[in-house]
Length: 464
Image (tube, rainbow, N blue to C red; front, top):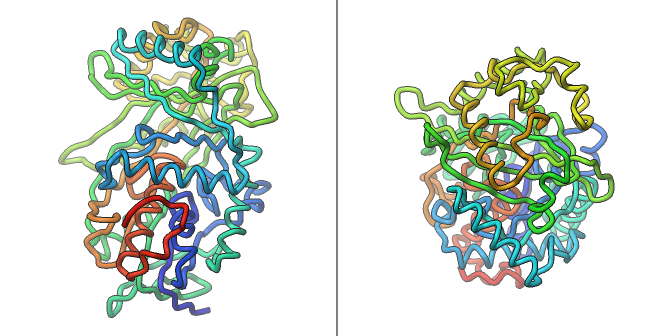
């Protein structure tokens, strides 16, 4: 099958979907290609990384509606005021798709007072608390929301090619040619939003096409699980709190990420690696809370390839765990001994992850990261009593690959004419809302270049 379109969007995650939303009122022929399935078809097969909705599409759907989380406005080439307009549009689109209108927590004076007190305590311990308006769609609701969004886009004339894996990108006579086993797509404008799962493949294409790209950082650490009551004073006022600080000794940037009150720890398959993650549902609740504790890793010459470094860490952890995540009590980690099944069973709670190997995280992760974790939990324990306790359970490895960064100019243009990048896999975002914002920007650039500025969505209050 051959297709000839004005715009091709590569990747059906939040970045690709919001590029499509932004172009849906134009008279341009647009197709969106993804190697995975439709949202509702992904559930039974547990296609976590690929498919319409992207990796975020089978997450628990946390929407952090602030420029302070999930994006670097400088990297996007916009101000925080401009970012807020794009965020408001992302929120509006999700509401229309069924995400709901309620923000987590009320804006009453009592809640504000608790947040300010928490922020003051954090600052006195050298910790920055980042927060803003949040929504929680829930991993049980998000696939339906993504399906509604896809249906709306199809009704607007966007063509979807699912289960279509692009093998090669070529440029001939200033047009892009995308080759798959089933089809060849030719387009004037290409928006590449490959996601973290497609980042390595797109980097190979970028090197072949002489697209400028550099190595970015990765985040490496553990998933922490503990009784929900321990974190309740925080999560009752901020659903997904973001704590950031510099570590003792190494001065690394350490942060909490993806807090899931009454949630579940899960296994994530990234390429051939077994990683850990977490999620929470709207209806089905556990009695535990989990969050990621991550260290930011930068590499410089002569070894700059953070992706390769992260893979080696994950491969070693998978070897130690026999192909399963490694689980360890904090008490055992501090005592430099492995956890065995008996020690795990003596916990005052049952772990929510069913498949794991009791073990020693200090054998699986570099010492620098292990010390950042130990000191990090001590730091958090000063803010949230009960975090730094013997029975706190740790799983590894949790790794976030943001390892490819593409230098861009206006509207996320690369050095190749009419080729734009967006989303996590291009180093332009970290999460659903940030991905959506970057996808909107890339599509606005297409509208500008095609002299179709007046055809942007009417609800998008952003001047091109």
